[in-house]
Amino acid sequence: MLSGNFSWLNWLTILLACSAVDQTSLAAVLPVPAQPALAAPPLWFTALVFVFAAAVLMLSYWPARNMLSTRQRMNMSFNPFHLVNTYGAFGSISRTRHEVVIEGTVEEKITGDTVWKEYEFKGKPGSVRRLPRQWAPYHLRLDWLMWFAAISPGYALPWMTPLLTRLLRNDRPTLKLLRCNPFPDAPPRHVRAQLYRYRFTAFQELRRDHAWWHRTLVGSYVRPMSLGRAESPPG
Image 1 (cartoon, rainbow, N blue to C red):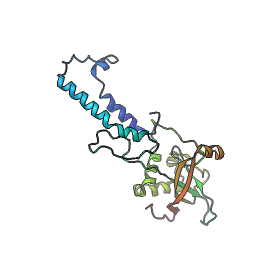
Image 2: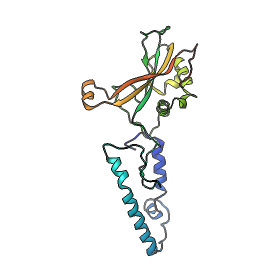
Image 3: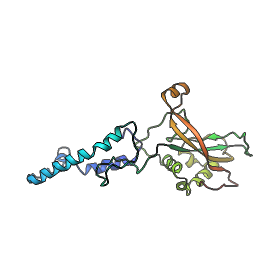
Image 4: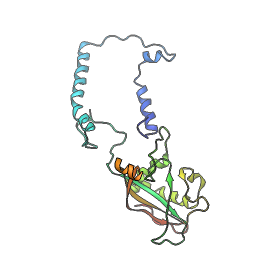
């Protein structure tokens, strides 16, 4: 709960863990009857449990060593039976973080000198000088979707263009999902989305530039669009 913005995944894990609490322990804090005493397991079963526990402990050496290593091999499987591999909230995580940055402009004609203003989201990385946010256990659904959109542009096909269209209209419910609106007086004439590669700054960079992130432009994600002429969706 304290170390990651996994929102409802945290609560699902807690709920599943509650099923492992025995009735006797629950009776100590809740008005439920205590569990009746169980017969002692046979010796062969006890021995089997100790053998299995020892085997899991031995097989866990390589995954644990990889997890603690400074040269960790991400998404690596160490056991064909999947008994002792490390667990993550997602099937695979890349070492590179991409972010979609949405921008708008009030200029009627787009040129090389057009000034673009960036829309800031509540949680996801945007401005490089903004301290990374902690929102769990609350779930910022749009920020979460934007992360997947950066990983797979096809994922955003059904909703990215409608989102940009609503920003062109200064749609109030949509703007409430964002941290700030750079066009409070009048809606922008054009909006676009750019794809950036983000990385955390080193300590020296943080002290020098007061920036938590360093970002590099990868390319255009959605070309400039207006209410009168919507460009093609990301692809």
